[in-house]
Image: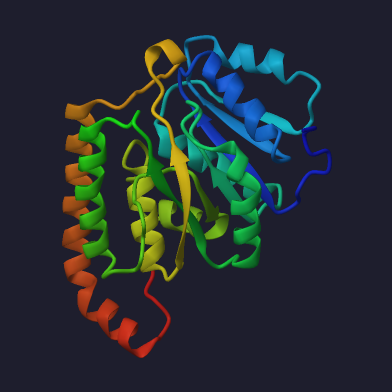
Length: 261
């Protein structure tokens, strides 16, 4: 299939990347085959993947590279891309990881759903195959349980799967109000705080594949460090949820506009 030639003026694919090697090129080309434009935020990579990508997409106006000089974390990279995208007039961004785990073939259907419901967030709900590490699958069930509590059952199908379409203005507003969500805590805290703002989650099934090292898979998840980060994140969110609970419950019952996150 030939890559789309006419760029969307309101929706873009946004891919943050840090040291994912040749897999970055495969991911971007797969996304580009489905959508125009595709923006990539190089988050201080040191493995030369930015140069590989620049060579691979040379002459393709549908791909734009944004390069951060130092690694700042996934959330910070996404925020940088969102701010640039809003300045260019975009209203919705589909985020996907650069390591080949997310299904580029579903980009058009997610974008269509987002266009039909611009006030909502379209969330990928992972469908795991045999490649999924059991520890990771069980761990996300715990995180999803906390998310369900923190949002008073807003309907978030999965809090960690980063294949999503966000309303750009709403997400920037959430991130500017507090200093968190800049690293691995981004995906979960983003959906919780957006739900608090009244951005409705719409879930759509999407496969996820955990690639082995032989397949070019790259993971920057560290069980110790990142689980501590997630624990601290949920602690903050639960404490804030308790403070917000009376107003959240009242507005949920009355159907009044949500409070700000």
